[in-house]
Length: 165
Image (cartoon, rainbow, N blue to C red):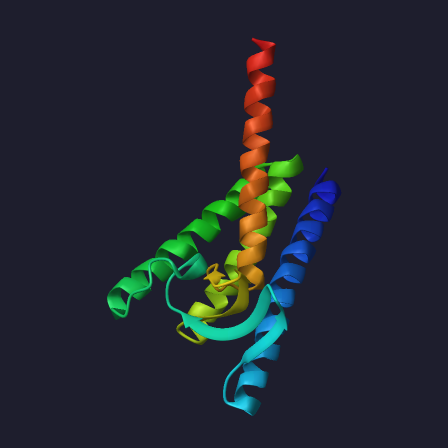
């Protein structure tokens, strides 16, 4: 039993680390490019650009404030949420567990940036014509996919639980 739990925790840690590292590598690449070229504004396709901005808010630039106390408070709340998600991962299984792992891996990537840079570098600019979605990063993608999977898991479990009654 102990060996089985260790294997599960090791696998979870590897997945979280892979998410964190993929986010870090993408951000380091963009930041080095910005340093060499005095900014990043790269046209990739008619729907996708790389454009570096610094985000002091949470995912997709929401809750951005210049006030230091508010920034630190949001950072503390994010840390508490990461701890809660970690506990939930331990108690979960199946799709819910892996969805939470995606959210935690992405959240840790952005939390690292909040501590190290005092802001999160966002650089993926998805747009259709002149309509630009929020600029985001790889960590935000993992968080979003994880949250969508959590919602789907809840919907399917809700339907399954109601069919039983």
